[in-house]
Image (cartoon, rainbow, N blue to C red; front, side, top):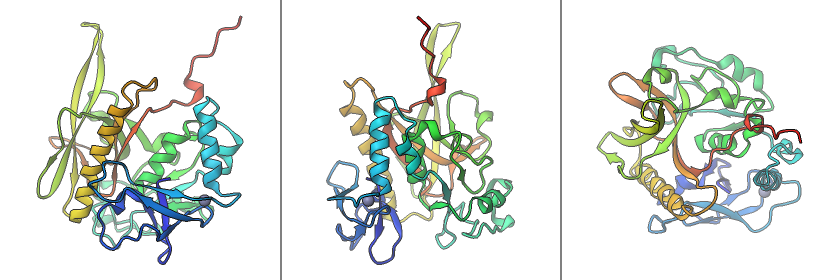
Length: 311
Ligand SMILES: [Zn+2]
């Protein structure tokens, strides 16, 4: 599993954010669902594997057991199961004000400082208020991305609140980069696009540039053509560890894609980020914590699938 809670502070963390962090106790975390002890695996950067938590045994009724069962049923083509309903897909992404991040001007109470709000967007604190008190709050983009990927049939019904983003369901907050038209991406969303592994990310003092692409079908030439975009992640508030975690996660994603090259599903490496397209700059991400990388096959909800013909 990807998330664990710290035994002393109770803070929920994503395993990948612990790479090379000083003083990390691999046994210092517990399951957010049932409080069973967890072990942090592969937490040195010399280990070319994505960091994750392993639980010896979850307690009965742990939502992560329900999640695991729902995912196993999803893999068999039954993604809409009662098990998925037991796993509570209600999230509010909070960007903590105590951390110096670009998009951090919305407090836990939903209060905002309009002067500092980037991109001139309106606050959607109203919708966050409506979700309380059943919110499963997360400060981590990864948690929301994993729920989006794992439960395709819940995207249209599960509420989600991300500060600065219009829309209160998963399918409204996420946006696939599927055209070459930059004007399509002027709103703040959680965007996702395919990583280009032949072009390595470029690291500079204040940002990292991550190349991504979209394949667009050209009817005249009767073939798909690749269109490249750049995702610029602001690193001015990032620790050296966080910079390392980002490049390590890209490396792990590349490795996972090559390992599954011969599999039937052929998962691809994707970048997910909270940001928008800015004229002459490309995609911009203000916070180093609002980007993550996954090797995955993005499943569409079942109702998009063609119905079998009646015999
Ligand atoms: Zn558990």
